[in-house]
Image (tube, rainbow, N blue to C red; front, top):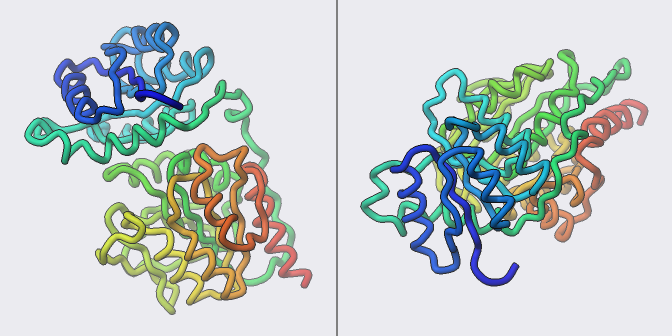
Length: 349
């Protein structure tokens, strides 16, 4: 992509529209080509202006953000960054339906305090928008909405194992595709780091639990890793698994710019469970998790990376593939089956 990044801003609040505009205009590589106050206007602008990316609120009059995402991804596929408030309370999990429909990522709507210093406060928004604007998107396939068959477990699988999963951009949809296939009696514990905006981890868990037979929870200090349960690292805390299989939360410095960090979780799991570990690196930007995957491999564990074709962002998996020997590189919809195959191989071996 050459020239400036062309952006359409969509929000029903005049204050929010102006604040987002002011933040983005602090970067001379960004050009605002349209400002819409509802989903209908956004759909029309995307069709007429062909922007590189669109920012989109969800709750708007005339046409809400969900319908707009459906229309845009069906007829004019364009990278979409959802910018929304965190005030959905119990219904905040509906934000993740936007990702299922084809939006790339979510950020929290800028607060009025950002008027004080656009360049400082809006830095993360600008960085994310620039990265997402360069992601190729395609017509959102109906196949992404199809339900996958639950996995039937072979009998008498090998004893306890831990599956460690790391994901970033595109991760919520990927986690859903994997975790929803596991039965309630799944014989391994699951620990997850998902890079996501502050305030959304709890809602992600609620959203996943609607479709999963296993229990999905936000990891708590002192909680034990047990079979049939997925523990997702809490915002703002590293998740470390100690020698007793208990979660320890840490406020130590970010690693690779993240807290929680995938590397921190993976390294602790490799140290404790050694060859009884399966490490999985999913779609996302950056390199977090790669060193942890190496640790898992050196400890005798198995490693799986999501392939390029099924990634929203082929960043973390690519770095892992380029820097180590991954045991399996497979499409997203094959990962759950590959996990079962590894468990079965261990039993048969």
